[in-house]
Image (cartoon, rainbow, N blue to C red; front, side, top):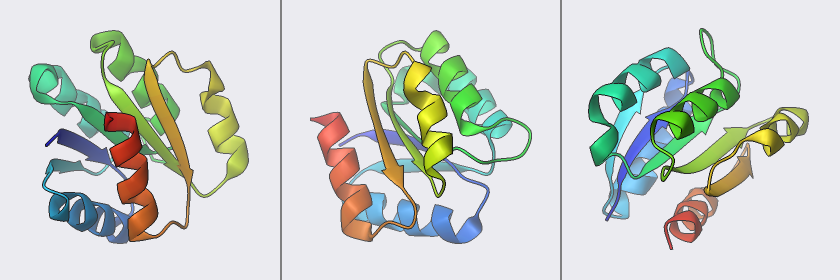
Length: 120
């Protein structure tokens, strides 16, 4: 199973996604914003397989986080989450080799499926 870095400023979403992915057997490290996630990834990049991040967060948004994260670890898989389609449109310039986007609100099955697909 994968080691996943999760970044979302909404505690309810963080808990939902963490529980869903942990139930699938993944190890999930939770962060509250893009800056915290980038700090964690910088210190632990070799152990992280997948970044799951919200777009709209304080300090550093998800698109900026993904750009920095992929520059740091080009093989990193990414799932970007957002409740606003125009925010997901900004991610089209992201140069991740394995990239998926999921619109909020989503079900547990949808996030699990997105993660399964990106890791396959």
